[in-house]
Length: 200
Image (cartoon, rainbow, N blue to C red):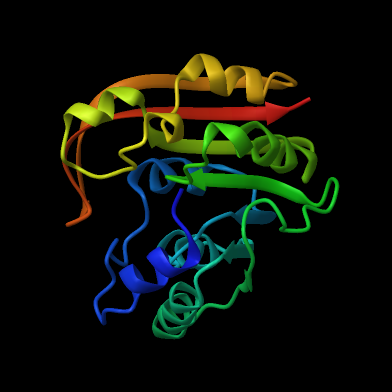
């Protein structure tokens, strides 16, 4: 698993290592949803949180990397938006019950030993009718060089995600190969999974 030091070292450079533009799946979906409170776990340098804030969402985010948070706040100032950003890891973040209208998990990869716990905490913090959106690498990603964990226990099968989110209705799901062009760390052919789910 990747620790705080790993992410601080990655984010310490001046450039935004995952870019300043939001994830394309998020970009395509978020403008069509009713605005509310949205949570971004493991948000890093803030590209997705800033995008949501620019659309008028009330944005909450966290990451274990202080360097990531600093760059996220800097990006928010550049774009003239604000959001709430805490330093926390995914297991200890205080997921208040039924507080969020949406949770966005964008390449938030958790080891299988904690994955289900974190995902169910994300469900718990959603209001009834709330949306969870996820994009992540699948195990097939190991044959590509376009990013993601190299540990198969941190890559996601749709069937496992369906179990993690079993109390939610699936509105969209897909496993596909696509071309990423989000940054030098997410570039090239990739094997990913996408989900949109609604809390009952």
